Amino acid sequence: GLRVTAVKIDPYLNVDAGTLSPEEHGEVFVLEDGSEVDLDFGNYERDLGLRLSGVHSITSGNIFSKVLRDEREGAHLGQTVRLAIHVVDAIIGAIKQAAQTPVQGERPDVCLLEVGGAVGDWDAEVFIEALRKMRRDADNSMAVCLLVPIVVWAGEQKTKLAQ
Image 1 (cartoon, rainbow, N blue to C red):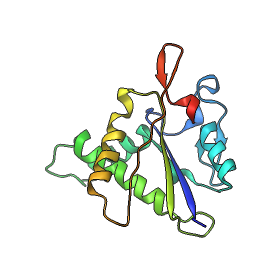
Image 2 (image 1 turned 60 degrees about the vertical axis):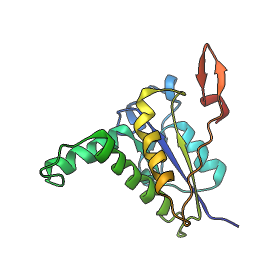
Image 3 (image 1 turned 90 degrees about the vertical axis):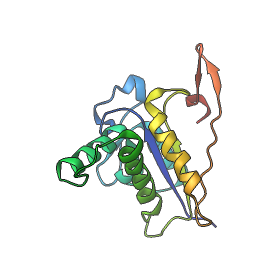
């Protein structure tokens, strides 16, 4: 009976999956709003029976672009723009926005969230920090649970096979 949404975080610097190698990320999946995401995201949409939008796909590229655009527009006047503050806060804002965006006309009760990449990827650390901060700051209306199944494959730890 719960209304569900999904968010996929990819720590690559591309703004979206439109120019990624299909051999590395699978075919590009185009959402109803025209946003280009990777095949995993498309599988979530199909498997969950949802119609998601580009707001549900978060990449380092779109987060960094937003933070730098805000800086150029004067949003951080007098401040040194930092990963640990401004980028983390932008990630938290993007997650909350996606989690609260109505899906098929209804506000979700639960947001499933995946941080893509391999276990231990430095690229994902800023996202893990944002989730840690969200969990620390959570009130009774919000919970953050982080579950990372680890599969050892090809000599490295991966979460990909468990998705």
